[in-house]
Length: 165
Image 1 (cartoon, rainbow, N blue to C red):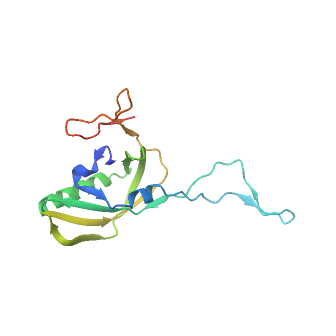
Image 2 (image 1 turned 90 degrees about the horizontal axis):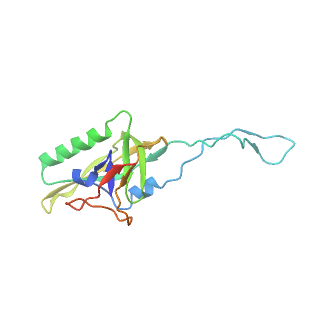
Image 3 (image 1 turned 90 degrees about the vertical axis):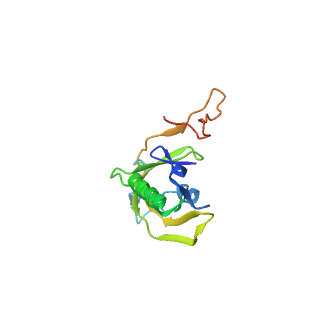
């Protein structure tokens, strides 16, 4: 289950292509180059061991499916997705599965494909290739509300209750 800015993405007809999102979110960041000296009278490098390690931004390229019952709903859901991603300060993607929040920035949507056949089971399916950047900024933290026995609490419709930590 995923949230964008605290909103369940499945309620917007948005789903991630199987096998793409966790592969992206679990990427290891590349450290920025550390200061070092290459003394001619010593073996190897003499690294700066006192300064903290900083990382290059991570680029995520998840594939998103947008599913709708008709063309009007598709355009409404697309507009809702654009509105969620449009904030100049970025957006928060919450993975309930990983228990982690990611503050991301929308950079591009490489390609848009309507899947063939377009109408299947009376639904309209579209595939969008996204490009997001993670600058390792601290995100607002959300989590699932649990009872005293550490069991997630669901609302009347069977959805998790999401709270700000």
